[in-house]
Length: 283
Image 1 (cartoon, rainbow, N blue to C red):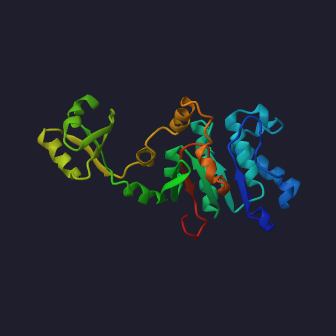
Image 2: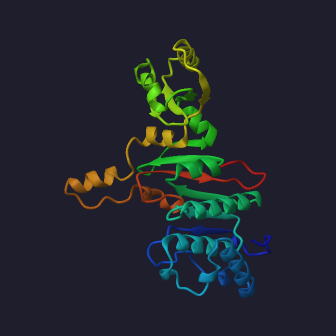
């Protein structure tokens, strides 16, 4: 993207909602913001090439896959060089390769002094990209702050450990250890949550007392996904399905109650991530 140009205040923000079918959804054309057509074409083509869809320039958006529609909408929102971007579920419909391309673009925009506010259910993306998050449940903010503070505020004590043995079955006894809950058994390592009234170091002592050869023992903050599950406590579609099962009309999406700020979405729980402008407060 080219460096900021001298434009009117009207061009300092942009929204990019989640695509639905063939609806472009990115608002006015660049001419509304005083952007010359030749500059918009040049910048647009550069972004199309970067997102590996240069060969689709002449195709109608309704002919594109959902993931490519997402990319086109993101590009359209950038062409007037806004200082603030509001995005709804930007990673929806993207495969891992394209999600990585979008993350790289986010970081470049961040480093260039932009503010990005986006809603997502992809907790890994929020954790990797955001300075601060807010988790919403039924349209209500249940926690907010820096990613580190939100994770530590949960009170969870997470331990990731590995021992020299034959996979997860070798540590099956952990389920019987007082104050220990196995949350993620695995071949490479096992993740457990240790009760707040138990010192995680005592688990290390227990492993050693059992004669285990400990290869890894890491005390960590819970993931944002764990925090989300703890606070929301159910899959995001449960409330809607229960309402329909009771014979009532389709429930209004909970996030719509705060949609006016450009960051709320259509499900019961979500995380909204924010990147601050360079030199500004992380918000």
